Length: 347
View 1 (cartoon, helix red, strand yellow):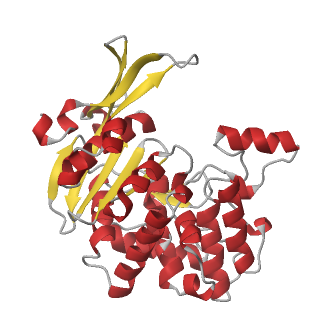
View 2 (tube, helix red, strand yellow):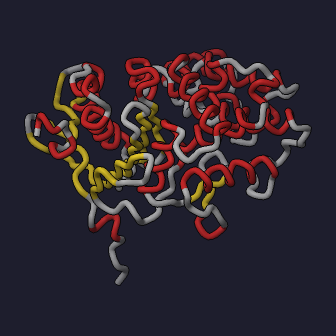
C-alpha cells in the first residue's frame, strides 16, 4: 500500500465553499510566510516537501531580461516588462504586446516555443472565433515570458532556437538565477516540464516564500539584481492589466495596492506574494490544485501580514470572502478563507 504523502497528511484548511449557509467543500493545503532573513513567521502544513512553483516564478525568470541589459537594449516599456512576468488571458492587448516585444528583437510569433491554445478569457476567445482566425502562440498565457527569453537571446547575439531546453544558454542563465535566489539546487533531479515546455523545478514552499521576500526587499541580492527586481515590480504596478487580465486575481490586487504588493498565481494551486513594506514573502500550495482556494487564502494573508492599511482594504476583503453566483446571477453562497488565516484582530 502506498504511503500518503506528508503534504497531504499534514495539510490544513485554507478555504471553505459555502452553499445555503453550509460548508459544501473545503480546500486543504500549506502556507509559508518568511522574512528576507529566512525566519519563518507562519508555517501551516508541510512547507519542506518540494512542490513545483509553476508560473509563480515568472518574475524571477524575467530578472535575466533586465540584468542582461536586453530590456534597455530594446527600450522595453512597463507594459512589456509586466507581460514578461505574466500569466495573461490572451486578450487583444496581451497578444499585441507580445508581438511588439518580438518585433523589437526582429522576430515574430514563429520564434515562440510555448505552444498554442485559445485565450483563457472567454470574451477574447469568442471574438477571435468570430473572425474565423485560429489562435497562435501569442495567445498562450506564457507568450510574454517567452518573448522575454527571445529578447534576451537576441540582444546577446545568441540564437534563440531551442531556448526551452535546459541546455540552452538562456535557460541555463534563468536556472542559475532561480537557484541563487531560492537557495535550492535546480538540477535534473528536481526538474519537470511546465505547461509552456520550459523546465520547472520542485522546491520547498519555505524556499519559494524566501525568494519572494528577497525579491521584494533586495536583501542578499547583488545591487544589479535588486535594482532589476524593483524595476519589474514597478512595471507590473504601472501596468497591472498585463499580469493576468480582466478579473484576474493578480491584476485586481496590484491595481489596488500598486508597489505595496506583488502577487503571482501558478498552476495547480500555487500562489506567491512579495511584500516590500513588511519584508515578507508568502507561498501557498492548495493540495487539490484549486486556485480559488489559494486566492481566498492569499487575500486573507495579505490582510494579516501586509500592514495596517491592508487589513481593511475593500478589494482584499472581497477576495477573502468572494460571492458565488449561478448562471442566473442568483447569489448561492461564497468561498471564504479559513478563520485561522484572517487578520489577528478578527481571530
